[in-house]
Length: 153
Image 1 (cartoon, helix red, strand yellow):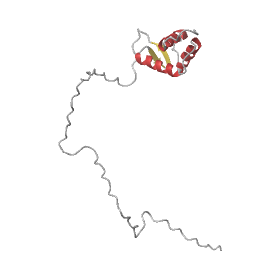
Image 2: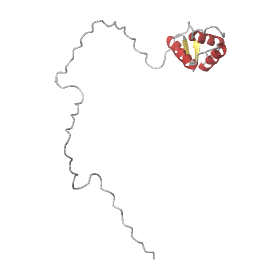
Image 3: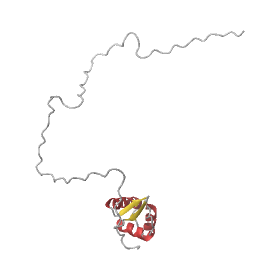
Image 4: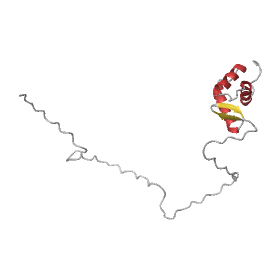
């Protein structure tokens, strides 16, 4: 297939899984090796494109991902559920109207704005403040004990 154009990635992936014909399915590296050996002139980002299309096919339900292997979905098998609570069904939204409705601000009735009040800028002092007198700030330094000679008897 040197001069022919490449088929779409989903088609190449399905052909690779059918050709490998493993009971447990095929992992990403074996699918990639099969595609690389079968088709020439693959794009430079082949591995990232393969990953993208495998994820898209997995999300759409064309492929089943089980124990790090991809396999074709069996039409007679019951769909597998994931762990945890299923997501809520999404509601259909109405398309937005061309004329946007003006939102009314709902006041809480207190008259105060929400959130933390803004910090007011400090006035700039024109004269320098004299250094503070008296005790210095912070914890006083540790007093070093004087060493005394010990006589040996």
